[in-house]
Image 1 (cartoon, rainbow, N blue to C red):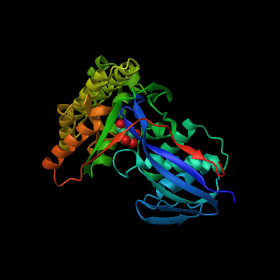
Image 2 (spheres, rainbow, N blue to C red; image 1 turned 120 degrees about the vertical axis):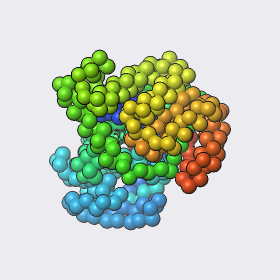
Image 3 (cartoon, protein in one colour; image 1 turned 60 degrees about the vertical axis):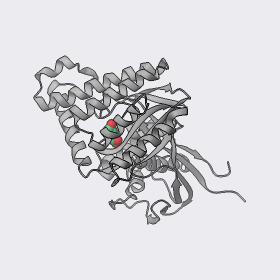
Length: 360
Ligand code: GLA
């Protein structure tokens, strides 16, 4: 009997450095994780999806464009943006599972969008390339879910390459894979802190940076030097100043990775964290604690990853030490913040979203 099921594997993402540069046309240095979302799907008239993690099953017609305010919008939104681009893929019956934790700062939402987009691309032979899938994923967030994010998460999830980070220019949307040494591990430490203010703070920073770029008459941080900032009002100078330095740090981290110089990458991450905490004010006490403790316990460097204001931090360590560093941070964190559900994962750079066709 032929198997009619498509099997989709969609990673999460970690951003090594390049925080809040992606909506200013700057550089980022993410990779796709080996923690993944899985979607097993068979073609059907409607869309019916069950999420194992949420123990929730939902269904909608492929032309239903009403947002629900639930996780289903990441699926529905794919149909909305595809329709807008002139495609009308069929429905499916699917089961979502996998190892990627939800809401842990590893882009489970981008992972889900890209799983669905890649499935529909394959099942309906839409012929969309990976860059295009990433852009459509970003539009699901921006236009359907209502989150004003940049392209970072979707780019990493769609274009990730095993053993590599991606040095992405978000202005030209071009990228170069850069090898991550085999013996390096990235510890992701989730603080268990979710601040209500994340969305409003994110939009506030984005608006300030965009206003500052406008005032300077440029579209991208790549056209700005620190000397140009002098004419800006204080707050714009402070926020865009961080973005200018962060963009420069991405270049330095990429060059150091090319040279296999992990110690320099670590030092760049540490400087990035200090700057984002002091000048972008996107950290919080718990993230600062994890970053300091990880460095004190032997990590090459550490910083918050993702938007900030809670969520996760990353730390770089040799493969042989990584679990020890993570455990030691975890013990300290639990003593200091017993009220938070702190947890960690060790991740390695992996391939972007992939679809196995039925019968393969
Ligand atoms: C979130 C957004 C990304 C990016 C980061 C900050 O993860 O989804 O687009 O802006 O914050 O670097």
